[in-house]
Amino acid sequence: MLFLTFALTTNASVPEPRATATLSTDGQYDVQIVPDVAWLSAEVTVDGNATDVGPQQADVPFVVTGSTASIGTLSVQVMAVTTDNRGVTWMFQIEPEILPADQPDMSGTEGRKKPRWWPF
Image 1 (spheres, one colour):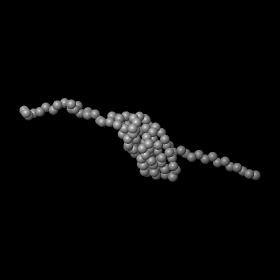
Image 2 (cartoon, rainbow, N blue to C red; image 1 turned 180 degrees about the vertical axis):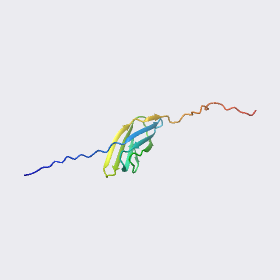
Image 3 (cartoon, rainbow, N blue to C red; image 1 turned 180 degrees about the horizontal axis):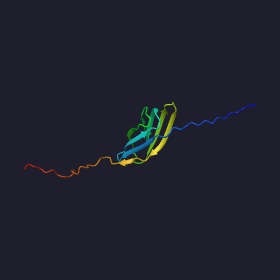
Image 4 (cartoon, one colour; image 1 turned 90 degrees about the vertical axis):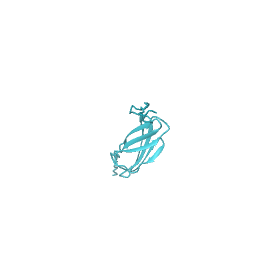
């Protein structure tokens, strides 16, 4: 008699990292990523600009900075090797918070003439 055994195995998928972003009107971005599991090595690509971020700890945020020509949604790809030596790739888009390129003067003194105390 021949017995066939079917073993169904399922790999628990590695959860996608949490990410937020800011983007200035001159194209400078900061993408903050928080991995849910530790990574032995990782590379993050934002709108085609790849950055090696090395090993990362679980639940510890890190920031990837760079510049892009487009203002709007950022395309992010994360390729990482987890601590159990599995390679994982995530691809997602982030709607960044748009910031002005130059921070405005909030002191209220801009544009006012300073009084002179000398006669000439």
